[in-house]
Structure formats: structure tokens, C-alpha cells
Image 1: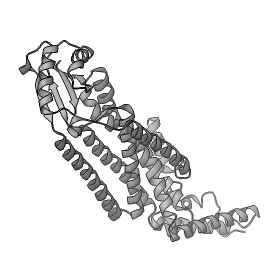
Image 2: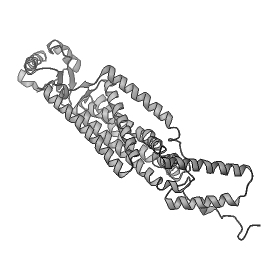
Image 3: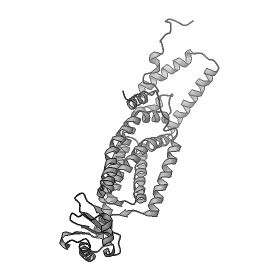
Image 4: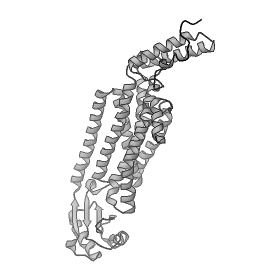
Amino acid sequence: MSRLGNLGHRLHRGEIAYDFVGKRRIWYGVSLLITVAAIVGLAVNGLKMGIEFSGGAVFTTPKTSISISEAQNKIAGHTAGQTAVVQKLGTGSLRIQLSNVSAAQARTIQSDIAKDLGMKTDDVNEQVVGPSWGKEISQKAITGLVIFMILVVIYLAIAFEWQMALAALVALIHDLTITVGVYAIVGFEVTPGTVIGLLTVLGYSLYDTVVVFDGLKETTKDITKQTRFTYSELANRSLNRTLVRSINTTIVALLPVAALLFVGGGLLGAGLLNDIALSLFVGLAAGAYSSIFIATPLVADFKERDPAIRALKKRVLAKRASDAARAAQGGSEEEPEAEEEREDAHAAAAGVVGPRNQPASRNRGKNRPSGKRR
């Protein structure tokens, strides 16, 4: 068995664990810093909207040996005061993009570009996108995102609990804010591919969160019928049991996206891949982080405001204090063991998982002489 597989097996059995839920204030602080940095980047730089949203013109040339820098220098004086975005396509042709250009300006620029690059005007393909169409696309994208969020909350509230639905919504907004902030800081254009990537990321983040919540729901079933564990402790155990699965899923998802972003967009120069690849890469990483460090700790915070869960925590802590005092006083061994056996049976009947893979009562009678004690 591999080291990661062995780690996953030990986490599942409860032999080792990391206190994610207990250290939730640290994760909240880290997320707050990242979110503030993303918001500041968005406020300072703003989003660089593609022509599909802002309107403009795109010119595509036939295959040419002219480099991107040469093309930018040659057409610099014929772009109506706009900075041209020049990209080299896989076919060897050039894609020249200008924002806020009218149809009349586009025809003049088309002729100037063809002349500067030594081509026929008819060989340079022109495509003009009006600002009204871009505004309509923007409104549809925002509407689709809002509908997605509403449906997510309704589904999770029905399938799980309202606390889980609220935690999942916070995690999704967290992922969306970070991804948009990175776009503003890096300066990549926001295109329809970016919106598609964001929706894909939100779906992936939701899937990872639902997997964790499903295990949490099963682990905490009938939790108030026992007094061995608090809600936060069982939530942390459930999170540890799904930790390796989340890590494996994230790595497998990030590898092809990283190849798309760094190899396709970086080394091979396929700039059109950057818009969707960056949103996927940042969003997948943020989604994996939020499902582990944000969603489950938030559920624990929300649940421990419930009167029944608060009362359970008081009973658990009181029982532990009583057991500790009894042990310190050298009390009878038989009474705590009988009490723990009853708790094991109670927890097993309620479906609550203890810190070991097998109930403690199973090995209780080993190496003990039969008959009555003297």
C-alpha cells in the first residue's frame, strides 16, 4: 500500500487525525486575508472585460511570419487610441482585438491593418460586437449565477440541513471572490470562457462539499443519544475520513488544468486558453480549500448554536470532568468501565462512530479471569 493510501486508511480508522475544526479560527483568518486581497485587487485594477461584454472589434489575419511585437508596433498608430491585444493563433495567423470600436471605425482600421502588415484588405477578417449585445450577455451571466446559487441553497437545505446549505453558500461565494480577484490582479480578460470556467468551478466545489457533508450527516446521526463526543469532534473525524479522497480528487483535476494553463497558454502560446484555464485552476484550488477549511468548520459553528447541541457539549464536558476526577481519586474501576460499555452500545445503536474503528467494548474482556471479582 502506498504512503498516501496508508495515511487514508489510518485517517479512516481514526488512528490519526488533524484538528481542522478545532483550529477553525486560523483558517477563517487566512481566508479573510485572501478575500481582502482579492477585493482590493478588484477595486484597484478592475476587471478587464473582453469585447463580448464591452463591445469592440476582432480582426483575424491569414497565416503570417510577423511576430506579436512587430504587429503591435506596426498597427500602433491605427487603433483609434485603443491598445490592441494581439495573439498568435495555432494556425500561424494573428488575432487583433480592440475594445470600444464602432463599425465605421472597424472598417477603417481593417484597411490600415492590412496595409501595415502587407496584406489584402479582404484577407483580414473583421468581426464587430456591439456594446448592447455585450451588456445583454453580462446580464445573462449574472442571472445564471444567481439562479445557480439559489438552487444550491434549496437543494442542500432539503437534502441536508439549513446550516449546511448556508455554509456551502459561504464557501461558494468565497471561491468566486478569490477567482475574480485573481483575474483582476493578473489582468486576464473576462470572456464567456471565463464565465463557463467559473460555473464549472462552482459545480466542482459544490460536489466536494456535498461529499464531506454526506459523511458528516451520517457520522452525526442521533448524536444527542450519546455523551462521548461533541458535534465539533465528530465533524472533525468525518472531515479526516474524507481528507485523502478530497486531496486525490483535487490533484487529479488540477493536473490537466495546469497543463492547459502553463503548457498550452504559456509555452505553446495558445492565449485563447488562458481565460478558461486560469478560472479553472484558481477555482479548483480555492474549492478544495473551502470544502476542507471553511465549509465543515462553519457547519460546526452554526450547529453549536443549537440548544440541543449546546446541551450535549455541556454533558460531554461534565462527564469527562467527572471521569477525570474519579481517576484522580483512584476510584473504582468497575463503574467507569460499565458506564463506557453502555456509551459504546448507545453510540453504536445511534450510528455514531467512535475514535477507533472497532467498539472499545469488543476487547473489554480480554486477559480477564472469568467469574466474579474478588
